[in-house]
Image (cartoon, rainbow over all chains, first blue to last red):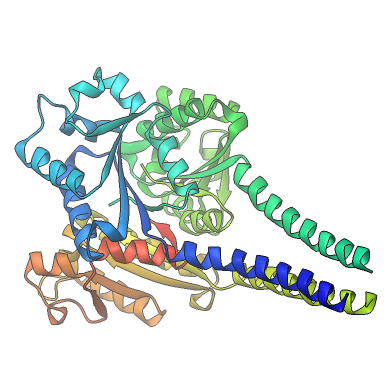
Length: 145
Length: 145
Length: 145
């Protein structure tokens, strides 16, 4: 019975250690970062920031980045008016695994559908700000350059 | 005794499950969001963002939002110079349960008392930035559009 | 054996309480705050925000603040062109224990070395945005006035 008690205790201790282990492992997971972009004048800057972020952590395998675009900044990603520099940089970031989210409210206000944006955007119907709050609650750190 | 051991083990397992349950319940709590507004040119944009936030989560019952205003943006909420659009939108947000905090340092610098601001502001004497740090440490996610 | 079971159970309960205690102790630690500054026009404002932050929490002993500067804002801290107001305020904040981090990517782009910046900067080679993400993952709350 002493044995049984020890087994039970050991089982619990193992469960606890496992739990603790998961927490520790969690903190060593790939860093997750949500970038917030709303100002049209910041588009190039933020795309460069993300490129530098990837470089600074040693590559896309060490970070998971989602850029959420809403407000005036989304105009810079309209298919018809996007400048070559934006297109090139966005394509490079997509290749590195960066995800691009477009605010559904902004898209409606600007009269565009996903097809009217540069390729690679996912529309977030709940809205850009809700998306950014959700990402933070899922463990993403927040950067708003 | 085997039974007693099992009871003890079960008790502990339940305590652990309960602990885990609390964590899960915590993550299912009402989302708490602190909005940060300092730029005068962003006032209308941020008030719209918050309106969209409420809509995007399905209403005020699903989110707790506090807007902290400091710096030049607070001028747009001075009673005597607030534009109708600001007043209307603020009143609608107040009705939806959004809280408005005004930075005490900014109020002193701008020479206004709470009575000089649109109705509904709470003065935060520790200052807007300290308030925003406190809110984050209390589990609010941070949005600075 | 009942006794042994209780001892084992008590040991586990203590371990669990201890774990909970560590979490509580952690939440009572000195608040840690990472300030983000990228806009040249915001330099004076952010330095004032930090001064107010220190005052609002009752002094440097109650908070640990790191200011990360990248992008155009760093120009305001170049030794040769810094305005007296920036120099004075930075020196006062340094005396209060505020740490100043300069983005290595920005320094390269602006052609400056640490010696070319006002005294007190630490160069962060991983880049300002990576630094800000790291700080958040280390428990710093994020403020971007």
